[in-house]
Amino acid sequence: MALGVLAVALVGCSTDIPVQTLCEGFTLQVDELQTSRNPVRLDFLWVVDNSTSMCQEQASLTANINEFVGTLEAFANVDIRTAVVTTNAIEEHWRGRFNNSAAEVFPPFCQERRLFPARSDLFCECAACGDWDRAFEYQRCYDSDDCTPTTDMAPRYVACLNQGRCLDEAGNRDACAQAWVRDASPNLQRMYNKNGSVNVSCKIECGGAGVGVEQAHLFCRDCMADTSMECQITTPGMAAGCIMPPDTIGCPDDLPLVLPSYDEDGNVEYDLAEYFRCIATVGADQEHRSTMLEQGFKNAWLALDPNGPAPTQVCNPRDPVLDNPELSPQQKRERCERVFLRDNAFLIIIFISDDEECSVDDGKEIMPEDYNRCNLLGDSDMRPEDVWIHPNDKNPNTSDRPLAPVYKFVNRFRSLKSNPANVFVATISGDAWHPLRELSEEEKRAERLAFYESITERGNPYRWNTYVCASAFGEAALGSRYLELVERFGPNGFHANICSQDGFGQALEQIAKDLVSQVISICLPRPPRIIDGQEAITVYKTGEDEERRRLEQGVDFVIVDELEQDACPGSGRAIQFSAESLPLPDDIIQILYEAEAVCGF
Image 1 (spheres, rainbow, N blue to C red):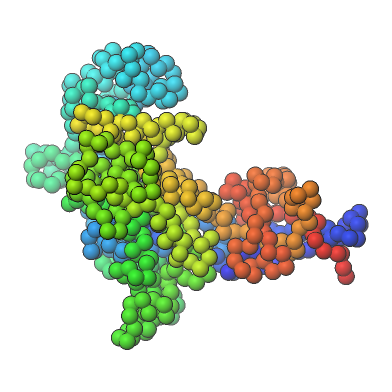
Image 2: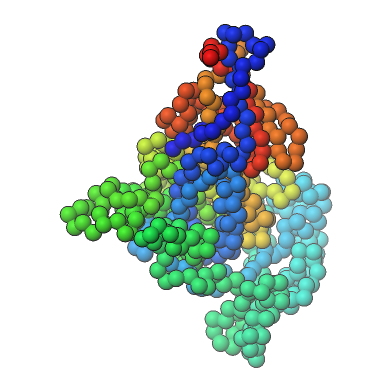
C-alpha cells in the first residue's frame, strides 16, 4: 500500500543555499492528496458487549457510525470493510462468529433508569468538601469523620427517598416525576459505596391497570421527549417501563457477515451506512450472568484465528474455492478472495464495553459464582499484590489468577498481519472521569484505587454495583484490562471513555482522528539532512479559515519510517501528523527541508 503522496510539486533550489546541499520542498493541497493516492484499506472488527447494561450504548454506537466514517473520509481516501462480534465467547451462536442478525427487542433490564440521588448534589451539599472540584476529588467525603451520611447532608434526596419518589437533577419534580420510582431500597447507610458510587436507581413506570397500550406509549414519548420511546409491558395489567427499542426496523433476516457487500456485478448490495445498525445491534443477553459474557479479547481472537470456529468467514462467500470438498477450512481461507483481513489492509479492532474484560485463559475455568468478581481474579502476568480479590471472598474451587494475560492477545492480534505495525486497537470503556475537566494521571490512579477498594469492601452487599464513572447512558466499571491493551499497543492503541456525556459521537471522532494520524503520512522525496542531531524540516499549514502557520516538530508532526515497504521510494521517510493537526480538505501543506543530495540538473 502506498502511504506517501503520489503527486507533489517540487520547488527548485534556492539561490542562497550552497550547491553542496539541496533545498528540497513541495507544496500540496489536501484534496489532491486524497484523490491522487490509492485508497487506504481499513478492516474494522467491532467487538460489542452484549450484556444487559449495553442497550443505550449500542444505540449510541449505531447512531454515530456515519459521522465516524465521515471523519475518516474527510482526511483520507479510504476503503472500509466492517464486521461485528460480541463479547460472548461461551455460546456456540456467538463464539468467534461475525454477527449477521439484528436484535429485535431489548430485555426489561434495558428500560430507562437514572441514578438516585445525583452525585453532584450530594457532594455540593457536603460541607466538609466545599466546592465542586474538591468534592469530586474527595468523593468519598461522606465516609470521613467530618462528613457522615446524615439527613443534613442531602435533605432533598433523603426526603425523596423516604417518600419513594425520584427528583430530576435540579431537585425539582418534572412533568413525569410521579412515575419515577425507586428500583431498589437498600439501607441508607449502604446507599453509597466506598468510592461514592450510588446503589439506588430510579425507574420510570408506564402502563398499568386501565391504561391502554397506545396511551402508555404516548406517555413514554412525552416524558422522555423522544418519539421512538415505547412502554414495554411484559405482563398485561402490570406497570412496566419506558424503553428505546432497537433501531432495526427493515433489517433483513440474513445479512452478509462483512459490510459493505457486493453482488456478482461488483455493485454494492448492502452498504455500511444503512446496515451497520443491523449487525451492530447485537442485543442484550439476560439469560446469563453479565460478566460471563465479558470475554471480548477471546472472542475477537476466535473470530480472526485461522484455526478458529469460523475460519472462512473472512472470505467472499461467492468464491468457488469455498465449494472445493478437498480443501480444509484453513486451506479455503488461505486461497479464497478475502473480504476481511485483506492483504495490504490495516486491521483495527474496536472494543466497546461498560465492564471489565474477563477472558479466561486456555485450560482454565472459573466457577459461575465467580463471574460477578472476575475482574478481581487476576491473571498469571500479575504480581500477587496486584490481585485485588479479598482472600475471604475467593472461591476455593477457583484456580489462582485464571484470566488470560493481556500480552497474549497483544501478540495474537499482531500476528494476524505480516507487518504487526498494521494492527491497531481501540477501546471505549470505563475509566476515571470528570465531567468538567481533564483528570491528571495521579487523580486517575486515585479514582481507580478507590474503585477497587469499594468492590472489595467486606460486609457491603451492594458493592458489586460499584462503578468508576456514570453518564446519561448508564454506569461503567473500570476496564483496567482494556486500558492495559491500549498501553501495550503504544501509538497503535487508542482509548475513549464510555462515560462521555456526549455519547459515542465524540469518542468515535477522536478514535478516527487518532487512527488517521497513524495510517496517513506524506512521503519525503529524498532523505532529510541531519542538522545538530535532528532531521530539520519546516512545515507550514494554511487552512481555509486560518492564516498560514508553522507547525511544531514533535508536537504537530513527527518524521517516521515508511509504514509499508517501498511506500516512500527515494527516502524511506515520511511525515505523520498528530490527531489535533491533521490537514483538512482544502488545507495547503508546505514542506521545506535540506536533503542529503547534491543539487543536480
